[in-house]
Image (cartoon, rainbow, N blue to C red):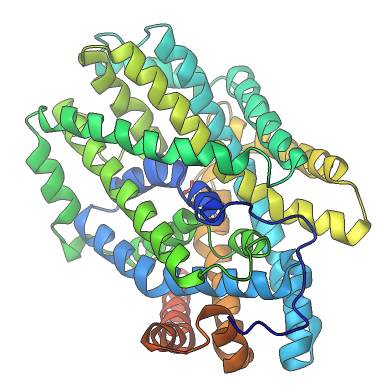
Length: 457
Ligand code: TRP
């Protein structure tokens, strides 16, 4: 690769193995978004049509934005705020582009505050599964277990605290240690268990109904809000729009291929989301659970399957252990940009930055804890406090962040700069990326945000 002589070095180390970056990026992408959030959104938004819009958003918008984030990150090699300011100055003479980095840091703050609460639920479920709480359980019993955790602030708050401490712990250690190795085992193991569960869901007798629900588009179910929800979910699941991928790109070696790694990650992430939904819906249908049950869907349907299958206690315990790990590796990537920002801006040490930023997010997370418990009646705008943070960060801020990032990569950066990172020969793949980055993604995201905005007011 004809890298320019003045290439910057990463301030926080680099991914060590060849696969390290792909694994770390997959670890970021694969998480609660695939197994918890995608199925319940598909359920709430009527299935097929939502899934179709989601897939289009992932490949036509999410993938080019992911490539843009990685290339910007690697070129800038700083935290998202400074990287955007630095490249902004280089490419267009203004550091104002750093503002999108700030929006990203703020968005990550909001996302992690609820992500850690749901991550806490999954850790709590390891204990429930191991103690045999789901053995031969019916839907009522399973729902009881769920509400005993989420509606009690002391219980949910404790697990949220545990999850946050684990997340801060890894960020304190830095990106090279632990993270790569953990993901290498984790993602394949999670897929293996999902395949076991798929086997079970095929025996429920409702597998075909699940398949039809997921893949038969009924466009009458599609509203402006559900199109925006599909867009937001594409951003959320791919971890794009807030600088997390940009931060990981900053630690990527110069010689690694960005197109190849990002395509691999997007394909795995999407397959895992579809697989989870294919597991969850047949189980839900077979047990009379509402597919539009909301955030409790995965937590109330999967235990029913575990309760019925031989060796269910072991499989369930392992599953929630793996899901907690997957959530953990994602949470790390949400915290890292803010920590890198604070370290570089105020010259703090990594431990100090991780602990202080993490503690603030942890405290804010109690708003989400309460919104599933005593505050569940406090509803405004989109619903509970959680619903509002979730909507604002995922459906509004991530798309805005991604829009600015892709416009920067497609229109502001010189063709030479982006080709240099993506493909110095500028082959058809590069041209396809550039076309999406200049036209498809910006126009589609703007259209969705505007049409939703006008529908609202
Ligand atoms: N993609 C992760 C998931 O699906 C969540 C996540 C990690 C994320 N990093 C992010 C979401 C950055 C938005 C932005 O669970």
